[in-house]
Amino acid sequence: MTDLSRFGVRGDGVADDTAALQRALDETAGELRLAPGTYRLTRPLEVRLDQGRRAISGSGATARLLMAGPGPAVRLTGTHRGSAAPEQTAGEVADSQRMPVLFDLEIAGEHPEADGVEIAYAWQPTLSRVQVQRCRHGIHVVANNRNVLISDCHIYHNAGAGIFLDKVGLHQINIIGSHISYNRRGGIKVWRSEIRNLQITGNDIEYNFDRDADVSADVWIETGTSSVREVTIASNTIQAVPTSGGSNIRVIGHSVEVGHKAGLISIAGNIISSQETNVYLQWARGITFTGNTFFNGQRHSIHARQSTHLLVGSCVFDHNPDYPRDAQDGLLFEECEGVTLTGLHLVDLLAGSPERGGAIELRACRGVSITDCQILNPAHRGIALERCDRVLVANCLIADTRAQPSMVEAIRDEGSTRACFTGNLS
Image (tube, rainbow, N blue to C red; front, top):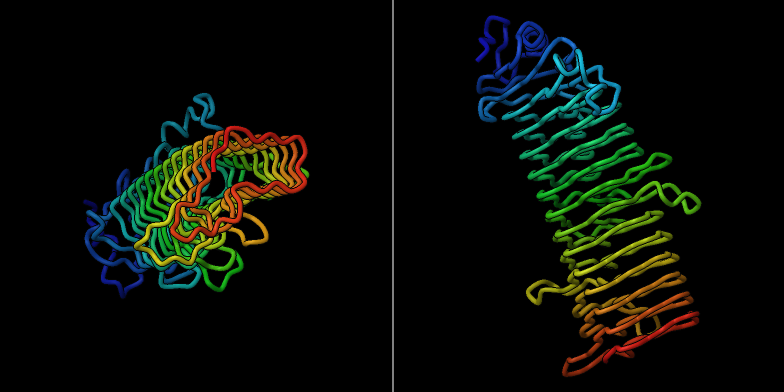
């Protein structure tokens, strides 16, 4: 353990330790290990990766950095502007800058513009067993980075985004086994970034919403003119409370004219619940849903607009009788092309009205296949189609088994062309 007292570090939570800790960091080779205590900062600790391999640890998370000024408590800055290819990470980057590590550390904010950690131009930055709370953004990734690993962290109760990928050029980022909750402007937010290979797996992502904002989301991907592709969202619990404009997962691409900037996304094996809309897609392409459980989508379970090549298979849309029943749930696709819904189990969904809509509703969609689904006890109808083209609905079971049935009709088709209905039972 570094003897910080010789640099004048106090660690009492009162004295400003910024200059002393920066001096200790600059003069300590390798790991800077903080003894138990609270280290008050008024400026960021600058970890300059071109000065050699660096790590900061906090004695089993008994050390706290208290950020009392604007900016990040810790700023990791390297010089890597290339890809992850071996020939571009050789030399100084591989020898001196590889894998900077923060672990076993708590960071808390005491300023409205305090952030937890900022990462820029880094190769293999690794954060493990780090807690960030009461900051603006928890972990703020900017500029160019490669092979980012965030695992076993608690990103909790921050005013901005929990993990914020902000106008970043980034390939290979894994967010694993972490609790990311109560961050008002998004749990994991990807904003106008150029990203490939984003993996979000095995996390608890909960209650990331802002009642005063127009939009909230637990996982929020919005590309602007950039592109985000090759994304896995798997084996997470993702839930919140219904808020206006809120989604558990929100994916927005570029525009209706350029609809392929957000895509090649696999959403698999998640529990997704308790928001205005569980999953909202717009201008997205190539999205696969497999093995998810959806419930308590206040307005919709899935709402997709002007998106292409969507596959929803082997998912459950249900409602637990022990929970209050005020959610509509249901699947709505508008102006989408290439929609396959197969092997779905939908139970007791309230979507639609006596006049329009149902548990599964498609409006002005092209290339629709709905097969081998069970739709049990829909409030109004099982499947509702309006002005669709090239439609196949086959081998579905649509039934109302309640003592007082309310289903108006199993399937309604209004104005569709080239439609085939075969082998369905109601």
